[in-house]
Image (tube, rainbow, N blue to C red; front, side):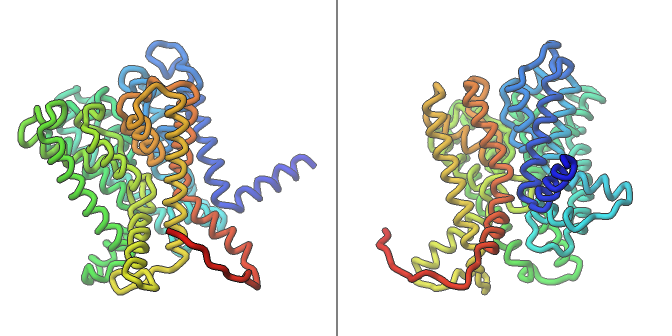
Length: 455
């Protein structure tokens, strides 16, 4: 009887992709925390403590990069390898990795698995989801391998052959998965003037944050020799907003920090340009840095908070509310100001359901960040802007910090852990969950309408 109850309960969980993903990620975090809590994971030979192990595991699985202990100085090779595996699984999604195993073993991908993959990859339709998964896996490993090869040309001379190769592999995966973990100890600050390292890492972060569906769409256009105007509306909006944010981010950071002696002011001309490029890229959402975050001017800090909240693109390894979400919200406001009934762009009308989802995701993300910031402002001994920066960085799974992570109280560490978990799953699952509720609550009548005054 108990076996039947357990089996029926598991069937019920697997029948709901959002619930299955949430539980799967939670169990993966617990497994990672258990391994990182082992004495063998710490250089000192002592357990790091379950709270810190849980925090680090959640940060790796949620591809955030916030750390309470220095990754380079605290963890053994075993601990670093566990973190790297968690980053890879968390970045691609545990169901995607499970599909890889199934494909290698020649097993059939069931309908339930396809539904979960559709939700995990944030794909619009169920059709072609296995093909998309294969593309994600193959392209990911290829891009990470190329990134590691390029980085090895700098890391091998600096750290020796084997250590240099290990560093190249780790940082390539960490960058592509938008994780932000580093093995150097001070992120990329020591390579602020290295074109090879900064541009390669930037490219990996951008490529990982664009979204796999956009790559497929672009590949189809190139293969069929069609004009770029034939790209899907999603691809157009993603690319335009991404490019706009990168350009605006570079110009803003370069101009505002140009004379700051603690950041760009003390650098050479090329280092200033490279660092401004890098810092406009990494809030999208990889927590690397080539200049100290704690020394940024308040205007730059707040601007980076905005970039972090927006994040990367749908169906990618990045976090945040996503570029297309912000795009749809902006277009909705613009259409209302212009007195238009429909939200339109590139001679296409955006469906009302997509508008409702975008507004909901945006408002829920804003609500979580505001409430969490308020709680941390009460519990932590830090300035408000540092707390806000930390909260948005956790929610958007960025990993940038102004140096308060290691000083968080136990309550603060648990809260940030929860925010990272919600931030990794929230944007991927809320829309699907709302769609489920909408379908189940669809009635045959509507209540009488009555207007209210707003604004």
